[in-house]
Length: 239
Image (cartoon, rainbow, N blue to C red; front, side, top):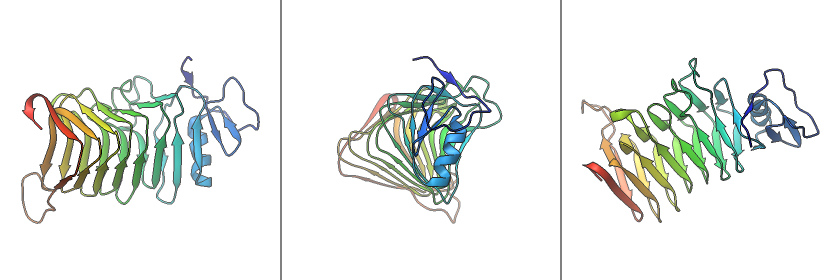
């Protein structure tokens, strides 16, 4: 299936066409951003119907509860995605399901694939999240629950982090896999929990820091609770 570009003037339709990229409440959309606007208004599920590339940031506001079903398709962005440093910005509640992927790698200016903001909730049940220039998931004071799927960070040198979390909490369970070329999880004042068969792999597996990296007071401390799973260093670092 070829990549379907998003049409700026597309509108919802009760019938599926060759240009349809998403389904929301029985309505088919050629424009993914428009489909997300509909899902946000209805607090419902958006299902991908094709590989799709978006040209602007997807935003989930604080009053919205949305499920993104990737099915078997890819959500990505074009090279030169320069006006935004995030592919998806979540201020509400976002759940990701399906076996597809969200890939910020083509947009060379994107810093993180998903930015989970303060008091927001991000739940990943399955699928693959591929990081941007620096991070796959950036969490600032929100809640991240990863029950399955893969979180991958492949580039960015020493700033390459699969999950970068400041305050808030990150819970990883099931068969979830966190894979990074450099750091699997970097926590600054966050609560991190690892259980079941979850795996974290990176040159540095998990790095725990105070909220303020220079250790100045006041600052929240990071914590790690591990009742299962594995943390593995794949290079000259430490787990």
